Amino acid sequence: MSGTVKPTWVVDKERGKRAEARETLWLFGLHAVRDALVNPNREKLRLVLTKNAFDKLQEAVATSGMTPEVVEPRQFAVPISEDSVHQGAALEVRPLNWGKLEEVCISGKGEALVVCLDRVTDPHNVGAVLRSAEVFGARAVIAPRHHSAPETGALAKTASGALERQPYLRVTNLADSMEELRGMGYVLIGLDGDGTVDLAQALADAGSRAVALVFGAEGPGLRDKTRDTCDVVARIPFLGEFGSLNVSNAAAVALYAAATRG
Image 1 (tube, rainbow, N blue to C red):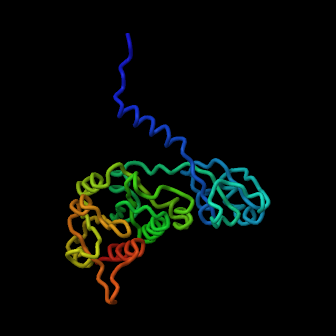
Image 2 (image 1 turned 180 degrees about the vertical axis):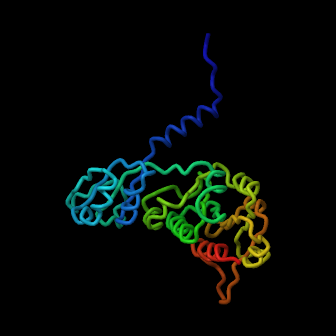
Image 3 (image 1 turned 120 degrees about the vertical axis):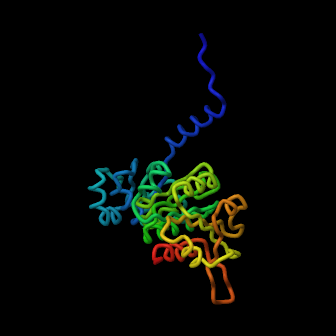
């Protein structure tokens, strides 16, 4: 008797999961490597340090239980970009698994506040958003699995350690996840220069309810589907002649406003 043939989509999904399980990335820079070394949830594979970096990271190395490869600066050969400011420290790891969306956004640490990023692909922008999200106590930063910045060394370095502590959830479909957030009681506030109300008014209207701040990519902004899924699209008012903020700066301003609302 022959076995049941699995549908193609099931085979593709299983193949994708196996590929993800094998995926690794290299973190670099003293801050990013130190925070990953002391993170018990981070699977660590290989540590390469110069003598100078090892001296600075001895405590974190001891905590991790790893045996580093201590090399001369000229022999620092790891697969990262040549222009990366690695400071003599690089660590090969597997991506973090933060768990399910509802678990993090309903009962996770921090305020009932999340950030959704719609196709923000620049790792420096995402790293900066993660850093601001941690500072202002957000529960998660959420982005689509495709067409968004994955975990990379550049993202981790910009996040300055926040990648190890701030949940970064990559979802299959952002609009569907936004609907899930609405079902959890979140008010979905999109941010765009042509928003219909000021951010302060949108937050006042949300009252004490949980808030999801939704940002689009540099240039194109929010996609139509994402915009239509929001409860309201707000703007950050400006006083000067130029009224556009970088997405990471806009996120920092909006997170501060949401975290400090009365």
